[in-house]
Image (cartoon, rainbow, N blue to C red; front, side, top):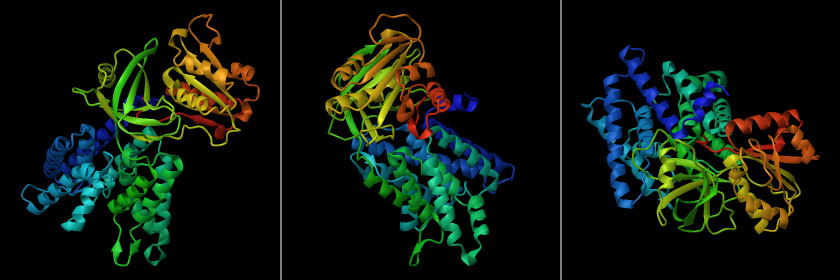
Length: 504
């Protein structure tokens, strides 16, 4: 694993974006000090502090009014994005100050006013500047994106974000559509100049890397993400218009947000803890009752938000796979506790019966194929077994006897989680399960002493080349198995790896 992979696996997506924005602002102020950029560093500092102050005040008012759980990282991210797309102003520029106050307050307010089921519809920063252009005639300049000295940082940092969240499909779909549309609609047919100017002097990269990829306004599956990127890319082209009305980058994004709303699960859910129990050594299951029913596909994940004081650098949000089946009325969360535990996990452990947390953004492509004739292999490492618990329980409840083999690896037999579910599946739907134990000899029925490797796969699954492999577990394990399966001749189209933002 490279140094970059190690770095990305130790930081959440939200913290990565926050650090990226801070680096851009500090670099811009430094370049301004040395006259590399025309922006006055004092104006950058004043505008940034003013925006953050307005965002904080607005969020505080709405959090108290709506009884919401605040996300401090979201406040700073929205504020810093605004600081990078609204031109910095001096304290004596009353019109500029008014623009900042109006855009910042409406950006934060939109998360509560224009929200359905406690989930906001629009990208907050885009909404704030779009409404400002409409009502007070002040527009965002996207100054961070139009300065060539900052462009390498915009691109390199942005690529880190996209690599972290693995949303290249979305960004590529947006970029290709935008550049093709710009080339085809170029004035005078000067395609090369139009594309070059877009790459060097437009908001293309910043919009794609930072705002297009906001998790809560992103579709839940791969093809919907590509369509979303295509819609925004099409409307991003400066020559696309309706009569005399021309689209701006922020309007293109907001229209894309409307599309996302219609194709995505709706709302934010409040989950009340009803049970906490030990599944295996170091692994616990938290069982929640949702405030209302919601649908999902077995194997998908949720963004879980648990407010707590003095959070560590990973914040108060996590992405965890839902361990329960859609056939169950409760929501199950399986968690492995390590020492030292993060502040989020300590807060989760401290929850009492009837305490609540919030969850939203059900998403993920790590789901069962629609074709029931497809033969499947599930490979799980440690707590990576949770999506398979969801899938297997669903198959059992639906009496769906597909051809499934589960290979489940742990260091010790005492670490096996959900064994009763998998053993039941063997009896009811004929699923084959092999528990691989690496660090001890054990007499537990169905266990195998050693690692899951090519030899074991060939021996236990002779028709492995005809099967779809699902892999879930630590990042290093997942990557190692992908390599092993490729070397065994398994098509990459038959390998699905579990992933969700903030996986580390």
